Image (cartoon, rainbow, N blue to C red):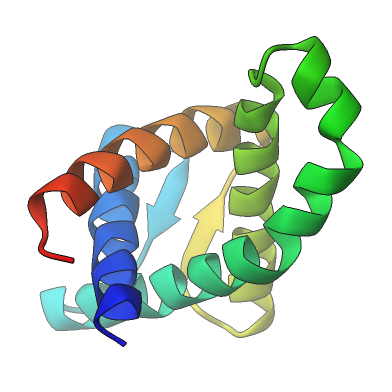
Amino acid sequence: MMNVLVKTLANAVALAVAVWLVGDITLTGDSTGDKALTLIVVALIFGVVNLVVKPVVNLLSLPALILTLGLFMLVINALMLLLTSWIADGLDVPFHVEGFGTALLGGLIISIVAWAVELVLPD
């Protein structure tokens, strides 16, 4: 249970950094509390997408991953971020990623920040 909380918190912090750094990743809310709650909800959506969809996509794209020595993982991360944005739009969560290039940059930022936060947070 603690591992899920740590990963969700790491994803929320990483998403906040991506929203802050990339102009075309938007998160709206009336107050800071609303934005924090939205980040937690988006982090949960992102976690479920990474838990359910990402392993299937990784398996299906295994030849491309091997051929590119793992660099195709950046594309997969971007697609998972776009899927998270699409699901959030469907659930009326005010989070949106504009385009694949933005998702590629956002996915890179989220991967690096989430990795760093998970190093700092206790297991």
